View (cartoon, rainbow, N blue to C red):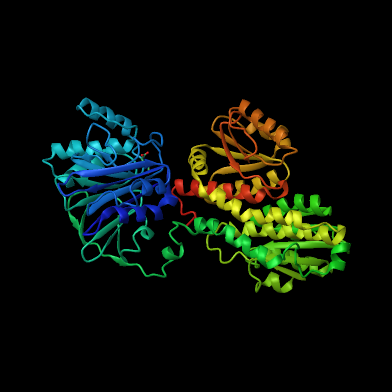
Length: 607
Ligand code: GLU
């Protein structure tokens, strides 16, 4: 996945291209580049590795290059490393284009996608005298267009359509020809692309938000379509050269795409909302140095044991909380799936507490379980994101998850906020029962929003890992205690939105049978944050390597496991009890990128 943008009109192209690229940065950002056409029809190309902000700086926000048409690209490398020479735009010249140096190539282009038969095509080009300067499949694509352009009388349509018939793979492609200063050509297969027009200017992008600021009249480009984009005008053709009659769609300001605030999916938007959602719930339930819950303190003092009941991710949040509450509040905790709770008569005693978790507050098994507990006269707490729901109406104490609306099918911010509410319960119970000073733990919990921001700032390693995992057959997680509990959530997400077979195992259990499942093509992800037991899990992970598994460690940034595992990621360090809140962001992003890389709609993978 990556992003492309294009502009042709009467304004300076570079600042518009950069603004569009910034909006597309969520699609990939290991390097970026732009090309603008100058008056004599040559090009100025500027590329930079790293984030778009590097390119913005290098070009002085686009002011250092002048021209009224251009194309841009933010790359997520698939073929060739994330280096300057591999960054797009690419050209038909045999030499690498140099930053800010006038380039007189016949063809300059950017490409989003993967050309699967690029090795074979490269050979063919080399036999025909071509020299390639980069390792990318995209340069092969541009050079192939050049080959057909020369072969078919400098006809841009034939050059592109012949290339489309010859390549295998996916592409959203923008091409500028030196000989055609008033046109940008586009083509697409299996990578998204839209074209927007105004009276006297046109815009091209991978996704609508990148150009919505400039125009609301948008064409969506379909597979195997070719477009000739001019100022305020675009002509579409099929592969036979027949012109297609297409209409623009008017994108209204309140359309769902705008609600996604520039993100391609609600899931990504909601992941980015987690820091503010967590701050919100902290504001609701804490004062300066204490937790404020409206729960009868006499009852809290008498609790003999706690059962937490939920389905899916709610169950996984409960599993994390089991360790945290037992450790901090010293109360035994059991966790039950709602369907099991209701289908197997639970043993509940007078001073037991049952906590029910449900995002909607309407989960039928959870509601039936709540009614069962109430029938036994057991005290209940409901934690839900809808305080008007049935569960909320029937629980004795109701705690609002305060996550705001969550539209993606898979939960992200509700899950994170559930964890926070459960942490607060743990320290509040400990305070009421054992006089624990809440402030130390509270200070740690309050760090979570900014530490999540830190993780969100650089997602490149997670994105890379996702693209690796989707090529493997199975992905297992191992961990101990909360590391295991949060692994359950990571594994569920891979199943739910990536359709990858995944399981989470208690690391210490691995050797009692499950290890036989490991072979080449299996990844094992070790979650390694719990200081006291981290070495043991690491040993288990290394054992998995012996069975041929690809091993990944996700740890805290005070550890260095790089040399021991095949791939590593780190999260910031906080109190061990709350690390799951940081690990879960990595696992959510991992599943998001995996889903998108597999071509699913991460918000509704089965739609
Ligand atoms: N396959 C191309 C490359 O590696 C394009 C990748 C992308 O879509 O960013 O350069």
